[in-house]
Amino acid sequence: MKYAQTDKRRKSELKSKKIGLSKLDKIVSKYKGQEGVLISVLQEVQAKFGWVPPETIERIADALKVFPSQVYGVLTFYAQFYLTPRGRNIIRVCRGTACHVRGTDAILKAVERNLGINEGETTSDFKFSLETVACLGTCFLAPVMMVNRSYYGKLLPDKVEPVLKQYD
Image 1 (cartoon, rainbow, N blue to C red):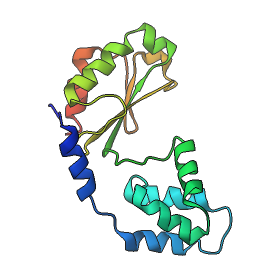
Image 2 (spheres, rainbow, N blue to C red):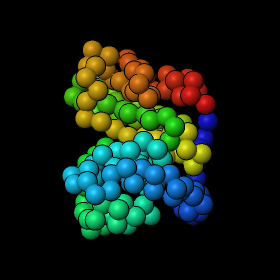
Image 3 (tube, rainbow, N blue to C red):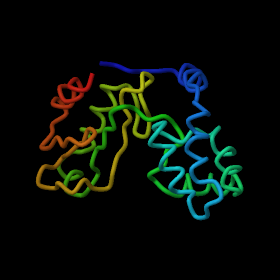
Image 4 (cartoon, helix red, strand yellow):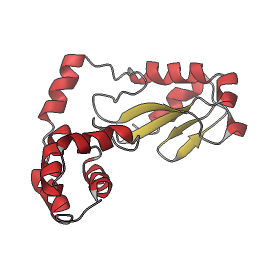
């Protein structure tokens, strides 16, 4: 279950991923002439594409009559927005105190080893994205990992691979 990739291969795959500009135009046309709708537009773009492709920034700015730097500023300020494609399955490993004390570092390393990616990265086939969070709010299950909306608690490193295989 290795998903190792080279940086070169990853960059070429991202470049080849085409954005449907007609879909983008349809979204922004609903908001033309309205003020204070930038976040709503970005949320809708991300819902449609799974991320906010950088090449959409100028088009969004033009449609809303704002500077591209304003669009970029909002995108980089709010953690809910992503400027790179995300995997179909989002893995969140808890780094809260209870999880830390009970071995979350070993869980994170097991996920990274199984997927061949590091924290903050996405597998080359876009099946998985890996991130860490400050707390998942399930301290009684520590250490905890979440895949999409499912929680996996009281984990041990050797239990990580069977969990991930469910999402293949």
